[in-house]
Structures are given as structure tokens and as C-alpha cells.
Image 1 (cartoon, rainbow, N blue to C red):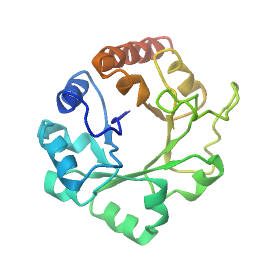
Image 2: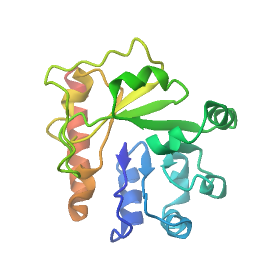
Image 3: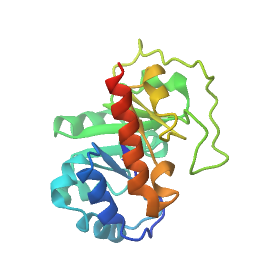
Length: 202
């Protein structure tokens, strides 16, 4: 998975997103905490509609119906101001729900969500002060959760192979793509090649 840059203005952002999907990206999370409804709508209109079913919204969930989007993400703040009845209603309506957690002890309590971003697994690329607290030998115990756990934080082409060893169900990247948007496509290709090599050796 790839998470968008939080910045409002990224040159050719919608074209980059389309290109990522063309290269095999599975899911794209749009996280624009400072965006207005109009700004987010403009970004969505620039993306090829055939990819809307692979896009998750972090903000302005009301746009999901307009664009036929069926994936919603709840930030920790958004989750704390919502409730399980609302989440179940959305799931009954066909939505896939995700959320984020930075405290590993919270994972068993988040069973209402289809998958959970957990991190930082490594020292963040996009937030220099966002440091991992996990040991090099960390192994995720998933016995007490039914949700998929997606690794987040500091993931790049060099450490991607460690994610499966840690027992995560997948990985989400942000800084590896958007810290240098001009090289974002190139960096995604490196990530994909790393993943293909990893799978071929198992």
C-alpha cells in the first residue's frame, strides 16, 4: 500500500497515483489532514475512476458516496470520536474499514476494522523524530486479533524483506515515495522488485 503525501500541493500527484496503480499498486490511502472538501475532490477527479475501488479516504468520508469509494480509514482521533455501531453499519453497507495504532497493546481491541496500520516499525523517513521502539528481533504476536496488521514507518526497498519476517500481513509506504516525488515511481519499482525477489526465494 502507498499513503499519499500529506502536503496539499504535489506536482502531477494524480498522474503519479495513476502510474503507481498501472505498476501494480494494490491500494492507495489518501491522507490530506489539512485539505478542504474541494481540494480533496479536485485530487480525486484527476485520478482514473477505475482505481476508485482501490482508494481509501482518511478525511472527508462524505466524498466516498460521490466517487463510489468503498474504503474508509479512521485516524486515531477519528476513531476516538466515533463508535462501533457506526463502523458496523458502514461494514454492512459494504465498506472496508481501517485504522491506525501506535500502541501495540491496542491491537486486540480494534477488531471492528479490517486492517490496522501499526508503526513506526522502522525509523520514519518522512518524520525524522518519529523513531521506532521495536527491537531488531521483533515478531508480531497476532493470536489476539482477527484484523490484518500492516507495517508502517520507515519502510524502503532495503528493509521491506524484514516485514514478513516480523509476521506483518503487509506494508504501507509514504516517505519512500513522496520525500522525493520526482523519484517516487522509480522508488516504487525498486520496492516491487524487492518484493518479487523475496517471494521467489520462499
